[in-house]
Length: 424
Image (tube, rainbow, N blue to C red):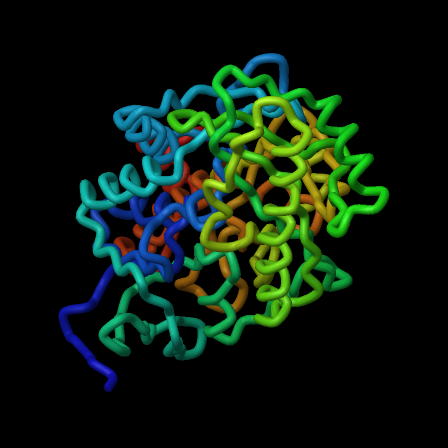
């Protein structure tokens, strides 16, 4: 039965509770907006908690020392993490040389709960947007599906921070899947390995040797022969290992099912190799593979401006910029063979306001990996640090739209973002 509650009217409804959605909700709430945040899982965090991507990428520029590119809501979340046992410091990845912030999934879930409650945001977990009511150039309302059935919610503004462009798709907007040839970037199943002997040093050369030997006749050859990305995690000291890359030919549930099962099979196969031949791993075990495989790319809805590879490689800065993108272009066209391209100019490029605006609907904004970007620029903007920046900007813009009777002044949005501590 569909319930219609006249009290469920909001200034803003945000679809998706990852880094982008959380930042959007908080950015709008800081401006006095009444916000509803909708998330399909029973926790917030996006890829960090639902796919065990336990590093915030994009908070810092490349270089010999970390230079901040993202602050505002992102820094507020990191400050909350510090209260619960994480150091929140920039960590240099041994594999790539990029600066990241290491995470613990349970600390992150709890920290995000705390911050969302602090701002009085109406959080709906275990809930999906099931349908959209649209009139011309505006979304009028949405039907949500949760544990108690279906319900209609209404708002003046909406943000798609779903990662998969679910809200845009249901609104009837055009989108592409993957790159211009509809190829989807490889997914990765991050693995946490516990039970490693204390003080064990992971020998990359030995790991590469074991992988090369295994790949000669192994049942499930390693996609990444370089040993992948790995580090010891804070709190647990588990090994966080990203070496299982998986091809996704389409967005069909059958393809995802195959990838999930194959990824777990590979995880246990590789665990046995480590237990048999890597010193210190004799009693190692799989601590977690995460609730789902880590997906890099699905749908790209049309925005009013599509960031380009040239914007990134030239480090283009703009008067209408609402956030900085500093993570290098990182593209996984083929499983196990990512490539990187550094950002030019001053080490970052601006995300312009029109890249977070939906094309064809006036009261819908994009945040996170659904903003407008070509396949190369997308390799930079999709990471969670940058998602905090685009999410906060979308939230402030949506709040401004609701507050100023359906209009937005971009210089004013930039001013509001700066007042919230964002870096532009």
